[in-house]
Length: 127
Image 1 (cartoon, rainbow, N blue to C red):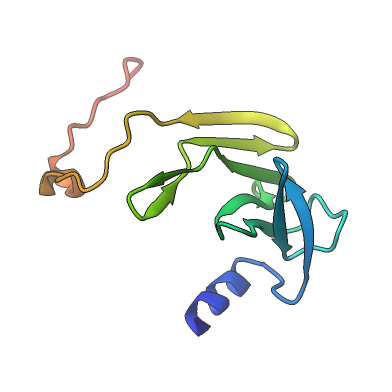
Image 2: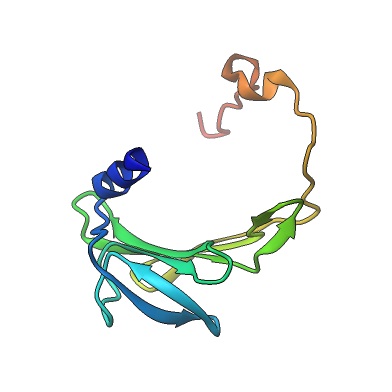
């Protein structure tokens, strides 16, 4: 637990600040920012399921932007939970949306998947 706390602190989360809020009609704990702060470094945890549903942090070369990431539509997968819908916002604009389907567990993956030397590298057409 000490390692986790140290890692969260190193990422800029102020673990001494927490409040309750609601996210998508569910009660959450917001860790790292006082109530009403929508730009400070913070993460949101669903109180019942204990799942991270939102993170807010500074982004950009000098940290001048606010990145707001949403983890939605959690569903059970075995004895864990998975978020098949993720939305990434920068300065209030949706930048990327990832939607995963046909999610399987306990799938054997080839060792080559984790070996970058086996990956095929494509040269962009403009080179």
